[in-house]
Amino acid sequence: MSDQTSVLVVGAGPVGLTAAHELARRGIRVRLVDAAPGPAATSRAVAVHPRTLETFDQMGVAGPVLESGRHNKAFTMYAGGRRLVRLEADYSSMPTRFPFTVVIEQTRTEQLLREACGRLGVTPEWGVRLTGLRQDEHGVRARLEHADGRTEEYATGWLVGCDGGHSTVRKEIGLELIGESSETWELADAQVDFDLPPDTIYWVHTGGQALMMVPYLCDGHWRLLDTAPTARAGTTGAAHDLRSAERFSARLSAGLGREVRVGRPEWTSVFTFQQRMVHRMHEGRVFVAGDAAHVHSPASGQGMNTGIQEAYNLAWKLAMTAHGRAGRALLDTYSEERVPVGRRLLGSTKQATFLVQLKNNLAGVMLPAVFSVVRGAPPLRRKIQRKVLGGMSGLLLGYPDSSLNGTGDGEGLRVPAGSRAAAVAAALPAGPAATALHAELRDIRWTLLYAPDGDEASAAAEGAAATARDWLSVRAVGATAGSAPWPLPDPDGRLRDALGLASGGWVLIRPDGYFASSGRSLTARRLEDALAVLGPALLHHSSNASPADRDTVRTTTRVLEGRR
Image 1 (tube, helix red, strand yellow):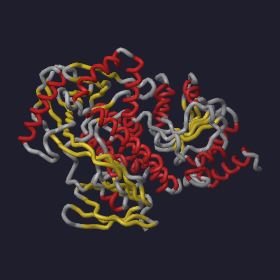
Image 2 (spheres, one colour):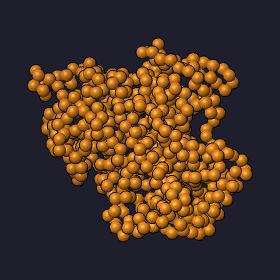
Image 3 (spheres, helix red, strand yellow):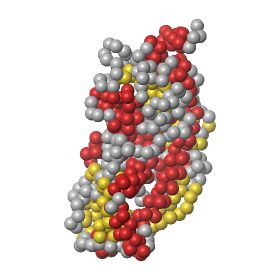
Image 4 (cartoon, one colour):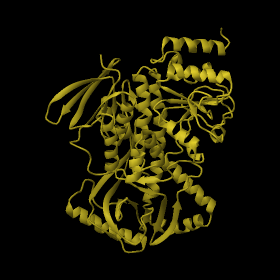
């Protein structure tokens, strides 16, 4: 029988590294393999958006990412040599500690994630290819081929495929990518010499096509995107690179209305992207995430960010199930929650692709008129900024219809189920409550926050903590040391007010930082009902609880519910 607390992760890109890190952080034995001979030398993705930065903060890796990239807060549009508009970042309606996108090479992001995985004892095995798998109710057996030709059959409890658009894992479990082929674009990284500041992403229309320029941290170093390359997909070599530099220089000069000199690119890629996705994201004990589950246009920089969010969503659920702290129904919520996100992603990237390309000569005439109206109408401008940022940032993503949104008596409270807890923390003024809540979101467990007023709520909270301390963190909001166990400081009551917590009120936060349930009056029965999707009577059967603890909470529950 396979070890139920072991997971094989196939693919050591940013998605696989995130999955491996979060599984290992939760006590799962992880093996991470990749068919490539070593880490990637070039970068497709260059943007880490705010919600992913919040996730990295929960993982404990945000600091190095923030230090390694340029913080971008603006998007500037040019056409026919004229500046049309500069859209500044406006996150006022989407509170976050990270109101910017970090522009950072994917290679650097992967390096930082590999280092984080290494600190947890997980190191990628390069040159190890998955060639087949089979599974049953007890586990998965994967057929692996090593670079030296050696083969092995590896038994594991679970398998996560993060092996890209041509995923072997996806094909082995019979999932089909559904969608359509799309456009051919060219990416390039190069030195660019011109007289505009590198404090914004530039969108440049030349009269019949559009280009984009994204500034890296290193001055003069840019990511360039051409939506209508003249070279065929797969064309490479020095001659191609020089032609690309000349073409980028000429087109950007025409669109920006100033001389632009593009150096020979360090790297180019001419590729045809597709808009496809799977209709479900797991089969039995095998899961897919990232490009293995959906491929799409790079127009809004969503691919890597979405994959990282998927890996984070899956890891805590898989870890709880593997440890026996939740039933298999919890794993069904992975597809339930993430397939609709993928579907919306394909729709939004299709729109973004159209807007980025604008392969229409008429656009060069119409755009100045359109954006003169935008410049003269601040409310419209703000609406556009928030619309664009909301779609790209990931901050509007939530799970309002998830079956993980447990029952509660929280009607009228201020934290909708399925919304980001980080938004509440970011909206608080700097101080002990904000610091403590941000720290709590880095905990790998569920979190129960409650207002410790009244014996009933306190008894329910303390009973839950006694029996479920291995997977549930219980914090008394506003309590002081000695007045209640596990206090979370809130000296001015701002956090309680933001959460809508009156005496005895409570909120439940998932391990990935989304609110799951809330209520006006905490009791053991209501808390158990809110967690029912995890499995029967989990609060009474924690693996770390002593028999005395379990007797105490059962007695407490009967007393509180009037069942003596």
